Image (tube, rainbow, N blue to C red; front, side):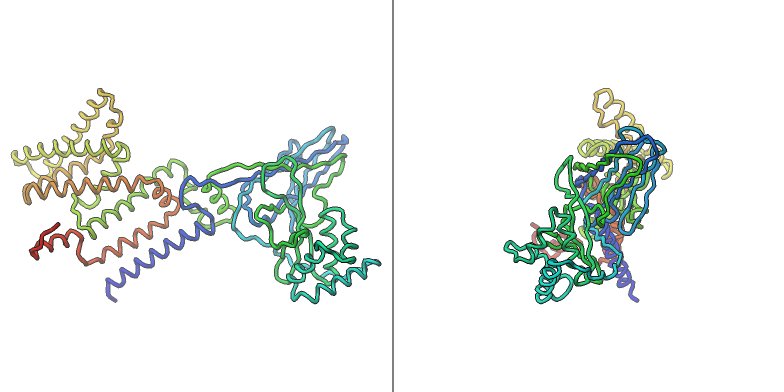
Length: 510
């Protein structure tokens, strides 16, 4: 197989793999593509209080298990001296507190933190078909008439439920609907009546209870929704309006009509819900959500490393991006530099000195070092001793600059010690050789080219958005690798060569 085709095949495969993993982490796990994005985090607190009777007490509270539209971030149980167990019952979870002796006012708290999520969560249980109840008169005749009317205008469980809710909630109800309405004095009772009607046609139905997450509140209430099963999944409806689906701001708390809390060994049981909204970085929310889903990518994320290691990799991961920049400028543009990656290493040093002072110090050290290097040439030294001498001179120059700038109070230039000394020494040596072999013009062109690439590399490698992307989505390194392989097979003209060939054709270069 042609090596050129093989290399391009690998390049395409690596680019697609890197972009696919990035897209998965961004859209499935919710990792943000830009830094400093904030997400709403809602904290809902259930405060349960009762009067202890001076004897053993047991308190049970249903707590969220399945929360469609929301991601569970954290939960806390605040109950001093109480034993706590968590039980799973069908579609619910239940917190059970127990204490040997409860006397006087007792207060326990359950707190949950959630954030909105596009993660689809569904209930897995498949219910049995209910048996039609024996409705007493006159309700039996009214319900039968309603059932027959709805059946004529529906085709399946979903359309049947929608039509039933439409008739039961009509603004101009008939006498049968009014009879049913008179039995309900609350939304919860109204939902029970609808479920009772659905039993007449053997449609499994139930009530779910939840809290509207809209604004901070100290006395939030649980609101019921209706669910019916169509043989494949649970469908949710608003029992008062007939709207289908779980609202975006609805946090499901429990399933079924069992009391949300129960007490043994005490009196005056009461429960109060409060909720508040805060903001946190979206990356923290997404990372927690990925961990809750046991995602492979959350376990092997750089965000799981110790902070000091994260700081190191934030710097190292920008090197491949700088290398890609060098490959592009040399391969596609035809820009000449001293060495391949020397400009990128200089750019890394510019991160500490900042660009302006870094350029000045780099130019000063290279200029002085170059003059001394020309003098050493007259001493006819061997190559290795000459390189060592240049290295020592570079260190002395850096030391002198640091001492002088310290006396002048220019603190920024004290970080000049971060310049790669060996690279500077090799730059001086390489520039002097080119000067001797190809003339001053060629040496200056390569020197300025190296400085230009270092400056451009500094701009790219200090860009916060790019640093964030590479760190959170390190699979983008595969994309960089693929681009390097693709440019490695480029055999066309470089941009600078097009200009040069115009001159060969006798045309004036603009």
